[in-house]
Image (tube, rainbow, N blue to C red):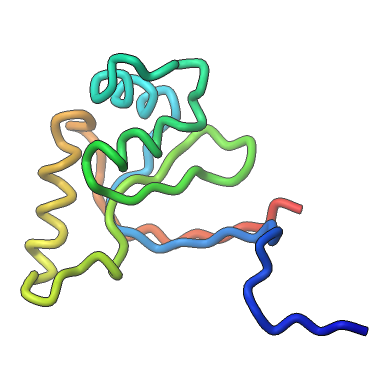
Length: 114
């Protein structure tokens, strides 16, 4: 019997914790298209990645076959000289032009898709 003590790369478990928004995938696609006019709307699952890359944020797609995307910053992104209020404001500033009516909050999710 073999016991693995390291990271398992084929794990079907996902989890994250970030401050930001949870948006409908269709809204994420619209924002991705604004940020990158060459974004292929057929690749809707990649919308969060485009937004995060362009705005220097983090993203996580919801559970498999879900219709939402989480976008924001993780606590690991908090800078040494940054207050919590500054951290949260940086997320709001980055996203408010694309998602003006969203509620900002801490999101902590996990799921198993096996």
